[in-house]
Amino acid sequence: MKLSIIVPVYNMVAGGKLDFCLQSLVDQTIEDYEIIAVDDKSNDDSLRALREWETKFPQKIKVIASPENRRQGGAKNLGLAAVSGTWIGFIDSDDWVTPDMYEKLLKKADETGADIVGCDYTIVQEQTMVPGIYSRNNSVEQAGAADAEKHKKMVLNPGSMVIKIYHRDIFFKNEIRFPEHIFYEDNAIGAITMLYAKRFEKVEEALYYYYQNPSSTVHTINEGRCRDRMKASLLYMEEFRKRGFYEEYREETDYKFFELFYKNTLFSYLQQCEKTRLSFVKELKKGLLEQVPDFSKNPYYLQYTDEETRKLIGMHMKSDLCFYAYYKLLHMYRRMRYGKQDRAT
Image: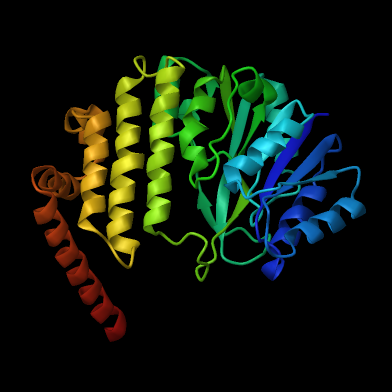
């Protein structure tokens, strides 16, 4: 078997999302591949729909029904346990791909000897094969035979896992699995997979369609999801230390932890959660300083963090309460100001 495509599925029947995804997979221009669809204990008709697809395409589709909800990481692990392909791909079950995506990625792998190959993606808000907003994923500077400098760039920007194919050795030889029962599972191991790559290559085309429904609540930020991001970030640090990567890539690892655990979580929490708590803001700071006490001296922090954000973070480091009160007022002011502008136009 050349390729195994793992599709974690949870409550995806509504709106034809699951059907659109699977249709794009059975329409692939390659022949020697399998689709492993893992139902993560859905409470809608997703499993029934998957069984119908399996009956219709028994040579292509294999359905696994998880006895419990393990979130996407757990579903992906069940898929990994069942793969027979030399190459492994992942796709979210509300997204879809061009008919020739996997043919192009496999061709690039064959031509270059790469063990991970990626592409770019397009962001759309409806089910269509018409490209939307072009989004680059990874960079050409990361491509080629891997060395320390390329690996540093990969830690800083591992890119999305769903727009790549991986040689099975990346997962099985190095015993890599996804964390389960949390969101943001890719944050924990995405960079790890890239560090095991001997060669990364990229197809400079948007072959993956990322469906971004503006009315969906799937990606709603709440404290629970923020805590999952924190857990994934702590697992990320644990993996780097356990696998012996931390010392060699310490500055890159520390900065990425700061970004994933603290910066992204803090500001999305304060901006998007309906109810926020000072105690959670304190907890974020405590967790950051326990792992990376000298984060403000990190060269990537100084290079990539804008001046306004550095001032806000500096205020937080001095006083949780002053920062929390100031930022809440600042956010309220900005919402009122932009809201008036929106009404005026």
